[in-house]
Length: 373
Image (cartoon, rainbow, N blue to C red):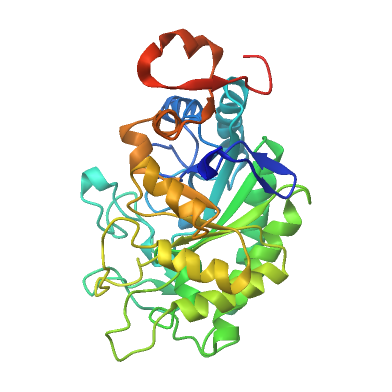
């Protein structure tokens, strides 16, 4: 059996294979509530054959949304709207269903990508973003409001409440977003965090809120379900004289998370500054996942410009990461896992309704799903 198609356990959640559908923002919610688009989008990806489907970054507060179209789980209305989306995915496929919980911080109140993507805090429908310090992402962006100490201390409860809502409606895995220049990453990086209280300055202080958030989420969901974290392993700002977030600091964060019951680290990078210098190329973030895995023993997810089945197989087989996540690859080819199974000679779980639709000479073998469809 190819390594990519071997099962993998996260606590008591057993994934059918090592393929993950990355969370991908859709900017199609209304006041944080899922729309018909989410039924179509999540339903399609549920049939992908991957082991785990992560639903897009889901805001834990209204002000934490990236755009006014971002998904949220901060109200009863949001929970009611998302429940049938989760139920749809779990009723049509054996795929494990996860959710990423997030707060955009100073990157909130942006326009959707097809509307330019720029911050629009001062435009109709916008709002003032908040951040660790009153430092904008771009020099021309509206200045975010620095959070007061009491406001910072209230954030873990927001994440915990969203996690509890997600657990109630059937999500099985939970990822705390600490990457891509969003709020928790902003607290971690000295590029965005210039506070002089208990949440700024030293590494221990900068990690305080992210670790408090993780502990709150871990306590809010059933003990048998896994909780992981997405990190930006580096700001890619080592060329600047000012301190930034580095892989060495990420390893220390991972160790602290591991001691608190973290089940995986989803290893991305960047997003903190427009001055970042990223060495883009196939699998460019995989070495970061490998370093964290080697230093901590934590399960890692590799992401970023992983496009080919044999590339993904090599990452897992060589021990560079435990799982491989694709985003754009699944949008372009929602059955990417089927293609990988055919190329690598592995069976893949798929609805019986599709079995006769596949060309007989493609080399694809379907396995029986664990429940009738």
